[in-house]
Length: 138
Image (cartoon, rainbow, N blue to C red; front, side):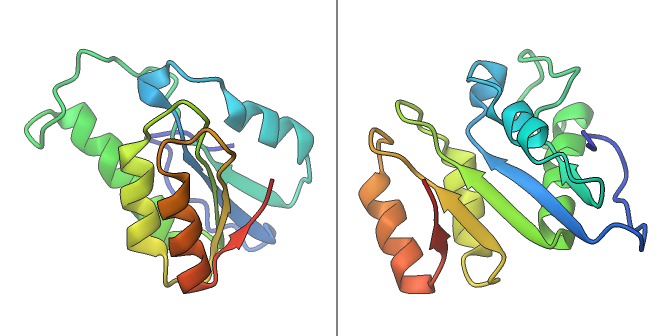
């Protein structure tokens, strides 16, 4: 498992790379990423987990904050380079950055989305997934 600011792993022995996109809510949501990694313990998969271990909610959410910029750039680079983007949108969350990422990568054929009932924009997510042929799972 790689976390920001770990560099992209292009080890040819790894069959798949998976970015764990979705609800984090500044570190306040359930750590669903850990559950996915624990349940998918294949040795030939590299997971990219944006849930930063040293996250500081006092970082300014602007380009001038070096740590914040590093985080966003790490996420974008990782999303671009991985084989698969697994996105989970938790019920009761808003997850605006995840929705932005869904829009950016909707046409890439590498998204798999889990959006249970209770997510505030589930209808929008379902329609986008249908329109662009994005696989949805429960």
